[in-house]
Image 1 (tube, rainbow, N blue to C red):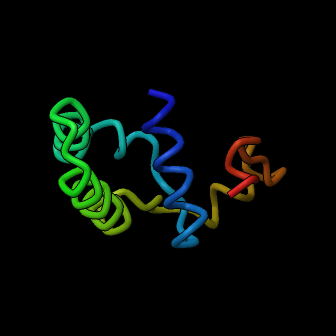
Image 2: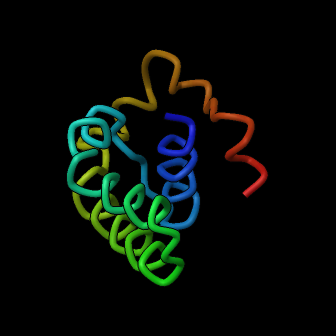
Length: 88
């Protein structure tokens, strides 16, 4: 779970998009298992390809639908972000 959150947080920082945690969670079977398979098989090139594919997939399919209104209410109005994302 920590690796998935770190990866989605990195995508947010790199591509300047806001990710939907729910969509990321729902689509895990599409992008996460390929990454795990490459790690288990110790295939570095395949891992790089899977991570790249996952980044593109999430960037296209897991963006928040209503990011502007979300920033005006609830916890998002304070501009909070996880501490380990800030170091990226």
